[in-house]
Length: 348
Ligand code: SAM
Ligand code: SF4
Image 1 (cartoon, rainbow, N blue to C red):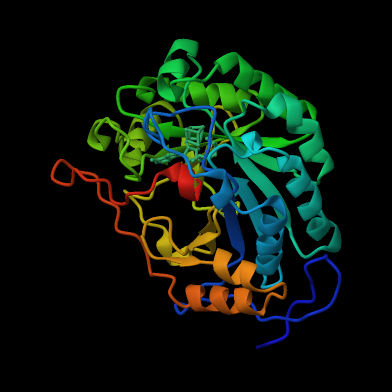
Image 2: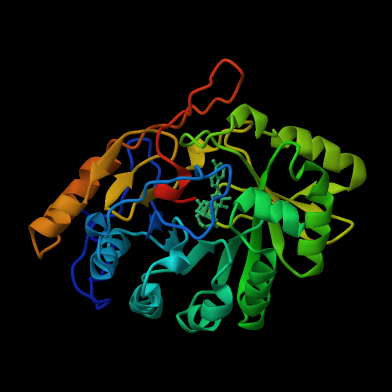
């Protein structure tokens, strides 16, 4: 192993481990951790109305999640995103943010962030900022309260707007993520752009991905962003820009608003060649690709020993299996979801 890193579990300078590089030469520097599969919403593209959640005993404790994240940070992960389910509904989640923030202080981690539906943000925004969180992603697909209720089944738009205001007041930089949904928000996209940019927030549009059986048919939800972009180009001047956040979005500047608009296009433009990330679930299962079934159990080696040797060996073995890319397809002939698991399990 090549010595590059000198961060230990407690954040102090100690062991030196090699960076994670897969067999295609991609360095793994970005970890997303789904800290819970539960959520206070039931978005129609993400979950079925009646979901069965994991028994609490199967979940990694907050201490175990910390240890797992720290093991990846020791291998060169520089960006850590907590997601879910809804990360802010996990009990005592702020303890995890607070303890992980030591890696920001030591310089081992460049960014600690989260993706949230915003429903709990008015309570937590200040504490997140105090933990060193600088930028957050908030998911919001519509500004119409009734439509919001239909899309999320259980959500209250006013509460989310309150959360966005609280995040901005706490000094957090907010990016809005909106899933482009055929016949639902497709006419509202210019409104979302002008609202987000008017409030100083970037907006990213996401193509719906075929993850999990959700009831309604995917093909009825799927709106290709190539089409959305062509429509927007008739109304706005979209200038390609190099701005990157370490994620898969490709950005343009909307000349009329001056703001940034991202396109996350797993279906119309595959971005796997530049993939730098892996995902861990709240049970310690590592998914090397969001779009493939292959996974590795990290909970067993984590629990088998107090030292990290077995865990690091399992991470190495898993990274050597990271596939070249996904093969998502949504069309009228492919009616099954590409993968049985829901997005809320692996985290967006
Ligand atoms: N609950 C948090 C939230 O909604 O932001 C974090 C988890 S959620 C699974 C993360 C992101 O995945 C959200 O932006 C959501 O819109 C997106 N998402 C969920 N299911 C999706 C799907 N099938 N296709 C594309 N995006 C999806
Ligand atoms: Fe919950 Fe996020 Fe999935 Fe919506 S997208 S159901 S808020 S996990």
